[in-house]
Length: 188
Length: 165
Image (cartoon, rainbow over all chains, first blue to last red; front, side, top):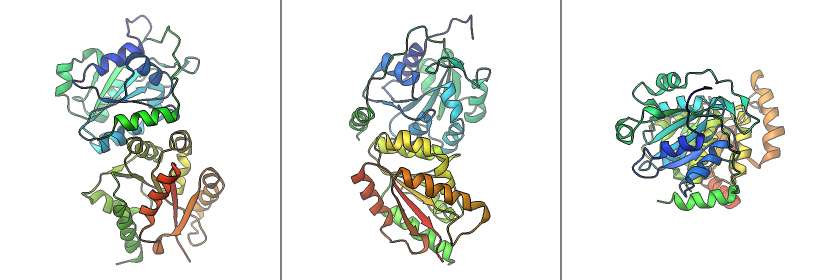
């Protein structure tokens, strides 16, 4: 990915959220995804998963299943999603149309001394298209809000991002704070 | 109706009585009948996961929104999921119900299940309370009672369903 003019993780998250007409619930993986989601677009509808690595896509599926009238975006790192790759198969099987997954691919575990991920050479677009279909998985750079509305769910976005040159911010919220805020924001 | 089918239907009725917003799981022979009934239910979705750890995540997502969720897995599946169980379900103090079949007990001596039972006894039970019942004679109100405990304790209720002599 070196040499490409790639967005930062924060900018890619903000761009993905901007595809929606109304703010979706956003469920982010532990580490840099939660940190940059909070840094770029802190919102009561964000659910920061600060414990397990790779579980955001599954947590997002559970949320989407009980909030069927709302849109849910799972914000996943490439290393995190590789740890829970089978969740993509589960989401496709569940036909959870109000759920989308964005994989933020920088080829490293940014929060863990930038150790390379085993998926650094993986074609995430091909993976997403194999699982969700060619019409439901796109590169972030090819999407507009108009196009996003027409894509059938469940959907997947692939975003190649640059390794961060900024220090990843701390989340600064306890699990109890995250839970209480999200419970209030997700009430029907 | 066979004893296994009757047990599966009884467990399903107890699940339905708790009015969950979703049920998720990975099959086990002792749970198969219940899972088929959950799949067919119009009252709640059943989310079939590829791996048990996903089930914990799915249940946590529902619980984060304040909704009731139930996980159906074998003891080996819960063992696969202990990282997620500890770092998500316990860390966030999330109430939901895990119905796990405790394979390898005295009345269930398949050679390939013995180590699952031993690992379950030595790990899960040191992490969180486990309430054990024979599947065939479990109380009708087991799942609603498990939710009441879980919501009061602010942690998952783990129910171990077993074969009996």
